[in-house]
Amino acid sequence: MAGNTEPLSARSRLAVTAGRAAAAVSRAAGRGSGSVIGGKVALRLDPDLLQRLATHLDVVLVSATNGKTTTTRLIAEALRANGEVVSNALGANMPAGITSALAGGSNARYGVIEVDEKYLAGVARDVTPKAIALLNLSRDQLDRAAETRMLAERWREGLSGQKAVIIANADDPLVVWAASSSPNVVWVAAGQEWKDDAWSCPACGGVMQRPGDDWFCAECGFRRPTPSWALSGDHVLDPHGSAWPIHLQLPGRANKANATTSAAVAAAFGVPPQTALERMYTVQAVAGRYDVVQYEGRDIRLLLAKNPAGWLETFSLIDGPPAPVILSVNARGADGTDTSWLWDVDYGRLAGHPICVIGDRKLDLAVRLEVAGVDFQVCESAQDAVHRCPPGRIEAIANYTAFQDLRRVVGN
Image (cartoon, rainbow, N blue to C red; front, side, top):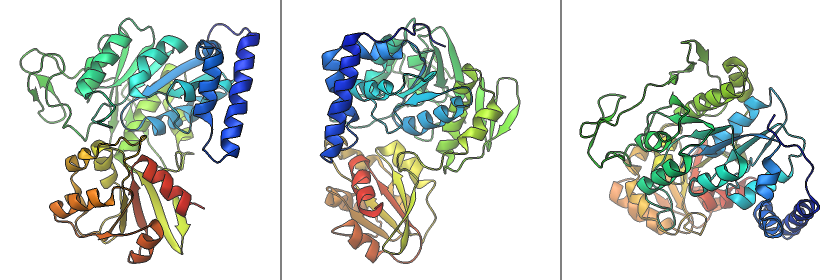
């Protein structure tokens, strides 16, 4: 159990109460869960509240461009084998949302916290984590996020001297560069399907060599570290060489990689791999992702893909042709308003699928598909797209706000 368990001060209790009230008003007005506005109100009244709320918790932080919400959920399920967990399970991953989540965990033993990449160092200073999981870094929200090399540098500076154990993906050179400043790192071979953001050496700028699963820089010697944990087919290999079977209800190789990292994190908290992996099987969906819903007499699987790396992983897990596919892209504030990333996605992989395109930026996506030589139809709404899809389970792939829009329509 983490150190200080003293009760909150009167100011902190007032801040928590005010934050809950603000969140309740937001929910009543139909503006979402209210976690962000609630956290903002609470932090305005007590700027140190996040630190105070975390003092009694053993905290693990999870950060990445892709997979952090799912990995956070898997870790939370694993740690529940040893005690109560508080977590920002719905993905509100900036300080305000994290504060709201922790405000509901006064009796918890563990805090399992997803953190936006840009806020990792600051949140780590506030909550004094026992462990930090680093999964990957790739281009995302180009209008507001720093270039990946800059994010890696920010992580590296923020983690320098960090006492937490860092559980890091040995297959992503940017993550390795960032984590290498920490004295206590557990390396995990979780794989890296998307490599287009890691062809130059983050240490010296040289060209990265990638023979097989290995990688190294011939100019400065920066290279892939030897992992202690590894994903091998359908098994997790632990540091002792034991192989533990992965049985997930979540689809795809990426989620097996997330489970591997989660098992390594759980072990740092004393949960054996077998127990951790058995508990992960209970996770069927994460904040609506991977849900199969019925709408207008059709089965629709809801899939989230926010950037080129995420779309690449998603293409690998959908049903093969002729399964119908709905694609939806928005470019609102939460998505990033720059849609140039569409040109980095290999939409040619969807050849043979009947495709319907919707969303605020459906015409941007239509141009991209036209150039890729993929047949598609532009539709006016989700309902229109479902009606135009031929028989079979529909795979619906959307970026962030488009995914929320789709859930509101077909999930009711």
